[in-house]
Image (cartoon, rainbow, N blue to C red; front, side, top):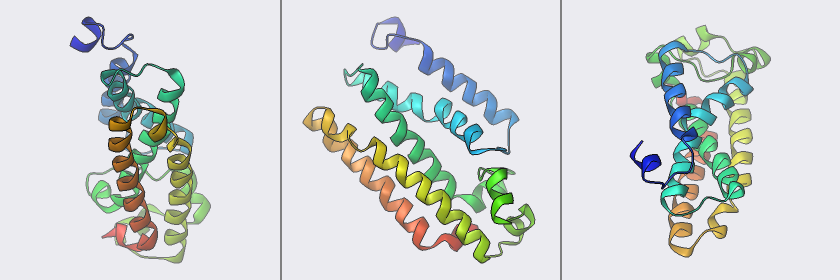
Length: 174
């Protein structure tokens, strides 16, 4: 609210989205579709990137759009690496439609079975997430050098974690 009140942020929308995401966190433990999960990321992760850009003096809508790709990718990477941790909290971020498509059940998640179907599912999610990282990559060169350096570190760190998940897909169940 202070950032909005003093004019650093020109709209309260990022704050309102974060509040909405917090409410979703209290009510939702499953996502039926990828689009539903992307909607959650648009409210939980993307406002953080937009606020970061606002605080760094960038208000260009195209830069914000590129930031959204990266922030969603970072959030999804976190979900894919933490399947077992989230399961322990009663949450499943893998879209139910994808579980069904690959023939993976929640019983498989519970048992920690490292089935070929589960590995295929994780690799599918990783590929989709990698595409988001690539779409957001231009942001790192469209901002000033200092911020670009920081964003490069974030981008490369996220991609490195995603690569680890891809290389050890079955391990996310442990």
